[in-house]
Image (cartoon, rainbow, N blue to C red; front, side, top):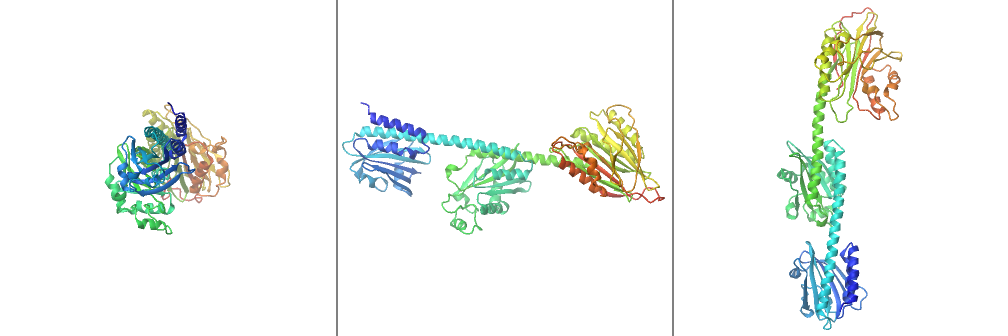
Amino acid sequence: MVDDTWSSALHRLWQAASRAEEVSALADDVYAPLLATPGVHLVVGTRWEDPQILRYMRALAAGSDSPVITATSRSVPEAAVREPGDEPVVTRIPVAGLDDAGWPEAELLRRTPGATFVVCTFRLDHRGWASLGVGVDASADVAAVEGRLAQAVDVIVACHTGILQRGREARRGADDALLAEASLQMDSSLDVEETLRRVARIAVPAVADGALVHLLRSEGPEFVSATHVAVQQRRALEEIGRENLWLAALLARRGEDEDTVFLSGPELDGSPFADTAEATEATEGDGDGARPGAAGGDRHSTVISVSTLRARGRVVGSITFVYQRPEARLPDNAFLRSLATRAALSIDNALLYELRRHAVLSLQEHLLPSQLPVTDQWDLSASYEVGDPMLDVGGDFYDAVPRPDGSIALLIGDVCGRGAEAAALTGLARHTLRTLLEQGTDPGTALSRLNRALRQERASRFLTAVVTTLAPRADGTALLTTCSAGHPSPLVLRSDGTVSEVLTGGLLLGVLDDVSYESHEEHIGPGDTVVLFTDGLTESREAGGAFFESVLPVRLAALRGFDAAHIAESLTQQAKAYRASGQDDIALLVARWTGVPPGADLLPHPLQLVKAAR
């Protein structure tokens, strides 16, 4: 005959189990139906960690409205023999035969009429086990009671398994979200040390309580960053990362190992992470002597993990996590390996970018003059601003060339595009023009010969350039001779503050054979300034769409009276601040004519050299 009462109770138990977030939430749905079974006087359950640590005991007796709950963490060594295997075990034991040393339930059972203890022991997870039992008298159908215990335990185990599975899925989802966020945060920086600092900040407190990050240099591990949930312990971690010999030796031993290593307990003896009474006392003081191995109060034993950061077949660094949390909250190897891989790739990308940046800047330096000539007749200065955040070599160039007749030639140009091919043309163009102008070649002829050289080289890119010469005259003025090949026209800032454009034009270089270029002449007086620039200056665009070209004359006029260096740097910074879009390089070459006394010797004056913008 089917027991409808128990069947209904079991059904309700299964429903409760599907909703429960903790196994303890099932207690009322388990204890009351079992206690309603004929012949049952007491229901008692226990939860154990490891073989012999009793975590809690719960008992409900017939006629009682509330259970007796004992929360504890006491060791019961004799209970170790009760630890079950993988399958639940049901046992009948006379109450009189229970030994208090191994059976904490015995005292409660003796207070009830039951003479027999029917108990089912079962394993919930790898960390411990549990038991559920009832005290029955002679009227009980023991076989039926055993069946009900087994069914209740099946529900409890299934509930606990489901909770663990949902917890794993939630942690896996949280881990995936953390890894995705970590990738976004780390990949958003191309600075090596900033990337490493982000690794530490992302991991704490989501992954660990503290983190130290080291970069591998040729001379060994180099400390970069440390963080901790407690400020005073962060400072202690920073000191450990920089100076502690134990940690340095550990990181050196790890070397090429790919697997994450966890260290705890005796493995941390002699380290700054060891769990000692001294460390606990330190956290109870003012915090100045706090050590990372101590959390104070109800603390957990310290665990550290060390993960090697490896990318593209080479080790780039390591990350050390410090944990003061329950074992259940420690990350697993798979998660740490994935985090380390992502961090390593981000760091490696930053390292590669850093190497590329140095190489590009070095190449860019060789494409620009290292020094500019200066005499008491003119004040020269230049400014160069790289606009491409990826730091490809730009095609802008400039130079100032003293000529045999005492004049000076100014040149500026822009090769279409960026990269190695643009750099090659930049070098060819600047050095060709410089050589020709040094020999006294006039600007138009110099540009025509450069155009012929580009056509002979079958250059796939075009370039623009402008060349102007400043020749001193006996009346104290200078003759400005300008020739342009498709380049923005120079501007002249007069000493009275007016700004004019040098009107000249010509076909850009490298497109057609046998092109000639006409020169434009005008005079400048003492205090007048000539400004040559590339289109990166004029094409800087604000959010509303206007170009810096529209405000350039006004901005230049406001710089009347300043020297060449101030004018060059000020215009560059103003264009940078102005633009909301546009990433072209900006090059400026500024020459301020100081004049010569009327009738003075116009032969070449002694030259000085000043450092040019690079």
